[in-house]
Image (cartoon, rainbow, N blue to C red; front, side, top):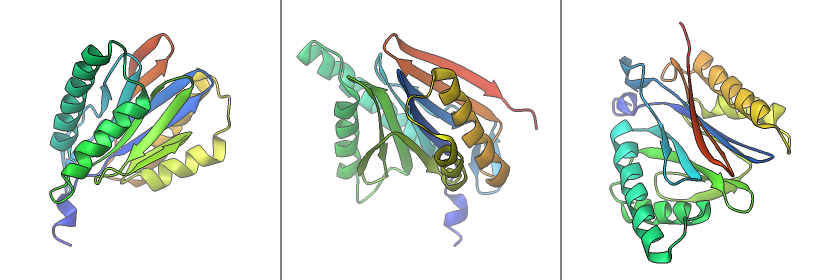
Length: 201
């Protein structure tokens, strides 16, 4: 029980829409009952059309995302084209499974465009689950309830953004480890846009 209070919480969500994917994560970085930062970034651009949103230990997610971004660049040079989201997810799964005896304490949502918008959820041991929407972290139960009640196929980009924000807000209302705002990656055929919203408490 004493150990659990030092595992950091967070909330990250992913929602597909008719032409792309929205990935979002709140900004709070906490350690137990202490808020270490109110401006942490848990969304990561990995390629021109693939991104990630993470929850968990901030150091673990940062080093893992840097590693995967480097691997993706090397692989792009080898095959002379961008890696699709499923290849990035498989690469990430392999790295995480290799660390299974000393796992990286992070849950990840990979989102991007292949022929269609796709989302993959990965746990700390590297399991891959494809879906149309996802939520991870200590606020996931609250966030997924909001998404499931309002999600439908063929959402517009604006509707998907609003749904991701509503889901994060619901998690923040009930999860003390989540808060302070939302960082978003909006991924479509044109590439990746980043947006950020600050919540005033």
